[in-house]
Length: 606
Picture (cartoon, rainbow, N blue to C red):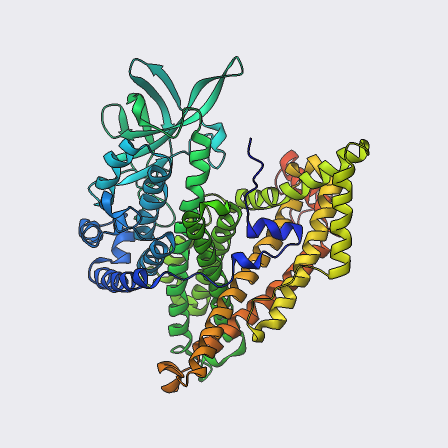
């Protein structure tokens, strides 16, 4: 078995390590792809302005055929597929930018494309055989077929391991029986990736394991009607009923019993594209906020001049910058891993961070936009209530944020826990484990002698932000070490701890992403100035783009550092047990049996 370990910038933070070579410089598409992307974005804008009517899509709970036809014509459904199979061969970062733009016009359209590409096309590209790729990718890339991903069931939502759909072996293949729910694109799709339990023989025993299957709509595949839902109403999410559906043996995706890996890795990439849709929607919300506060007057003045109003707009801009920086840094890490497989990069934690941050940012921006609009924000005729409803959906799909926070915390603490466990084991056998003990002591001495992990590749104007990151990383690693030593194998059940660990990791990674991105634009500005070229925007008297990004980066890092400090303090002093007891009271008795004006056991006054 190989002893090689994967690398992850996000997971390294849990060990107090800043792997800055992975995040500097901030990733950018190569020039040829940049030109193609710029041209495509212009075409997408024209299509969207001509055909995408978000109010109509929301009211009819349907994406019009002319929108789908336009997306096909522009090749949107094949952005990630290689040219030899009918696609454009774009990187994940460039593809995300297209979905980002679509999200600024309509969330349902953006999610249609995100699910098709992130959950169907990428699953086949990564796990399909040559024959499967040649069979399905050309038609999916042209948009002649639409893809869907069928995992969730009535008793298995985020818990993929609990699915009950079964695939029974039969001559020539398998027969699938079961029910899937919340199948995005389900009413449009004719190529489905379906997950079912199969019996596998391992170590002399028959065990149930999940297998992924490529299923085409046909006999036995019954597509239910989408239920009316709160937001993203144009996104099709029906139930799917499989009644003794025959699937040939050559339609197994990946290996028999290997479906859990297919589901987890595909969801990771799908989350990134869903996050891109969040970014686009947040950009639209910020535009609405600015339009509202610079035109609405109260008390004889434009409300945008008021401090509390400015604070809400600024918060949206700052959080948007952080979530966008985090997403595109993670995208760049994925593209780097794809180009240089020998690096063994693992970006699963970063993908979960990107999804949580992007979805919570769009939700907060939607709430702020509605509040800034006043009573107008409550009207069906205004965009605010629709955008607020759409933002709620991002908090649930793909993956609830409670589950994602647990994943971030537990996957990040795995290696610190393993190190503590290995050291504990060898201390019981000091002679046998002498080398490991010495290595551990040497590492502690090296850290004490030469100092902590530091950032060196940031722009000089970001020294303060770099120090905030270094301080937070050091404090975080110490707290993680204390937590794994204290709680050990109990950590999977300690969700208050998990949430705090995840919240610090999210803020810390986002700070790093902001500093990396701002460093790039500041360095580029310095290079222009050194050549005597200030740039068109600066020459025209507009705000220096680099200075704007410097302010956004400084604001986010300052706020995030304060949140991290407060969160770390709550590891030692908190009311966790009190809150658990209050919840148990609600479970065991009436949820709220009190009345402020009627006290039980007393008689009213005569």
